[in-house]
Image (cartoon, rainbow, N blue to C red; front, side, top):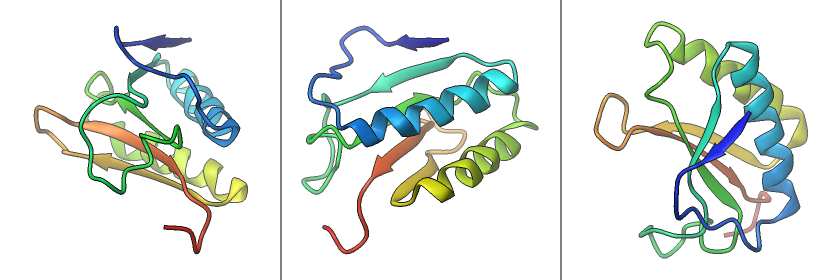
Amino acid sequence: MIQYKEGVNIRGTCPEILEGQMVVNEVLAQYGYITFVTCGREGSHSWTSRHYDGRARDYRSKHIHRDMLPHVRNEIKSRLKPLRDFDFILEGLNGPNEHFHLEWQPKGER
């Protein structure tokens, strides 16, 4: 199940991010968690952020049991690898802004 935080802007999302999100959703569901999108194209990010062009999404991670967090992250990264050009990182671990960040950026493109 995919839920969206109020105000998340998903207009103009590139198809590759949707493909990556399917992987995120499948793995989270496998572990018994919902997929909760916290950021799409809105928000304040660095000027090089892929959020602005629909190539990045953020997902809630705080609802995942701390012992399971590395397993979930690693499983998602593993399943994204064959799709190529995805970055999937856990940002702000244990901080107020902790979240997963999914980004599609073809290698060699900045």
